[in-house]
Amino acid sequence: MTEQSNKEMIIELRGEIKLIHQKIDTLTNNHMHHFDLDLARLTKFLVTISTILFSGLITLLYRSFM
Image (cartoon, rainbow, N blue to C red; front, side, top):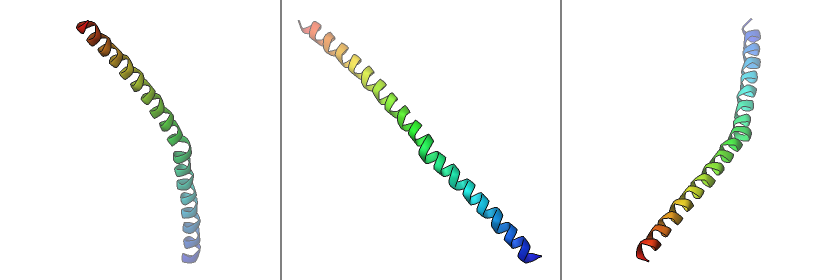
């Protein structure tokens, strides 16, 4: 009986390990890709806003000295 229950527990643990491996694979391949896309989109947005603000500041300084 003990040997049979040990085999069943080993089979159960192998299944859980496969499930954990699948979740890690999904996280690294899918979610990280989406995080990368979101970060790229946020970076573009921040660069655009910074450029607009910087050009407005330059225009303001130019007009104040002319």
